[in-house]
Image 1 (cartoon, rainbow, N blue to C red):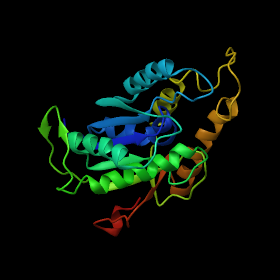
Image 2: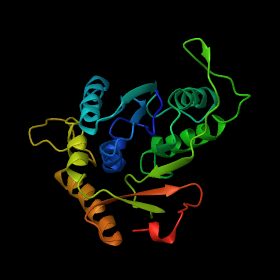
Image 3: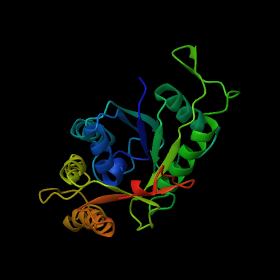
Image 4: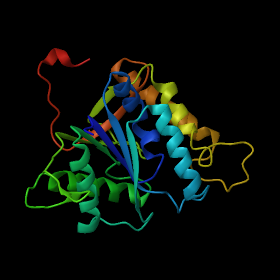
Length: 238
């Protein structure tokens, strides 16, 4: 299956927190979108790997994803090396996305920066024909996405591009709230974490509203880029 957009996250819920509005909008426009989680989030303070599996499946339905896979890298300890790069390359060559989303280039959680560089490097390497990979016993053709965009997570990184997600904020927040063990729940007996307070939900909404304010819309999400964004006409900018 060829995808238009493939989003990678170091942990289940990275995508939902950071770029779910953009994904929901593109799905509504008929684009085929998939998500690949690098780890099962097994080191998370709250919940378990099994509960995260189910929560990711629930969030995927909310977002209307074509596929969602988990590469089961070791949470907290995966590295940007050949073995991990080859796993990403196999996924890229399998789904042939035009656009790839990946983690923030620098963030509070060490896996986010590692995941960012790992996926970005694999996107380049995937286009090299002398790197051989296979899927179900058949050799894969080289594939390099046209664009790699890094979404914004915990830190307030200044975006290079901003996407209007007006009308899709409810879908985004519903996909976030699918991770019931991770976020605010008045009845939960789990330990408190930096993302489990009610205020954290407010911070997600505030960031989207603030970026929307800056571009004259209601809600928006920001991304950083690896090369200059380009438009066909200056009038294409909103």
